[in-house]
Length: 286
Image (cartoon, rainbow, N blue to C red; front, side):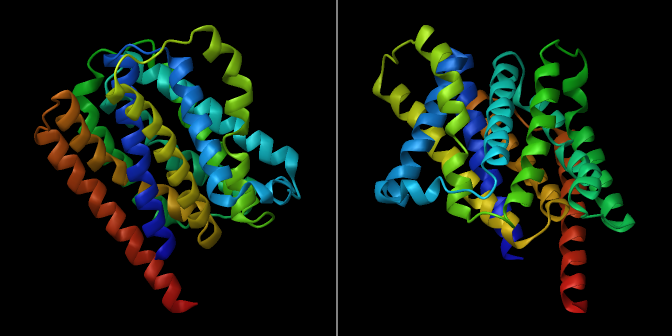
């Protein structure tokens, strides 16, 4: 139950991150590379400040450093592809593809982690995704070529989630959190500096800094959640992002929810409540 709550708050942070990023690259016109790089730089700085510079040697002492770096690369790839996608697409279109993540995680967690889902939970996951498709149906009238970016982002994030769960059994949360932004900071620095564009207003600076805060806090909660529950159990609760995407789309971009959003939202919420019930039943049995 605690892990599910942590996951829901993490998804709220990621929804804020996406809405802010769309504002920065789609409305304010900042280069994608600059926004992504600053997102990871702020994330990394927060890690050092909060955990303490004197602990750097301990934070870098991973039992699986290669996998930690691979996980960081997967996070960088997911962020990069997602920011390119939201530059060209509406939030509902990118969200529709991203919500495939639980199905991919459920499919891969069995052979990769040995965490197989039962048929009831798999059916609930599929039902939730059908609800998402119902919500997003109007947005699929004309598929933009950039939807491919969303699929790449989704698959990268699914592998990132699985690696997070695996590393939770081998490294402390602080170590995994420390490694999270490293690949983005190092690999994206040349591209960000080459296309650097100074924000012209204080509000732009604050928004640019905020995405690093949302990312750092959200991924910290994600790590804590995966230490307490298996990946297939947590992944379906990414569907709660549907609510936040609808709210932020209305507040920031004037997207008004229609009857499809309301109907699909009820299906998503119903599948989430059923998954919550199944977890309580499993807890009672164990």
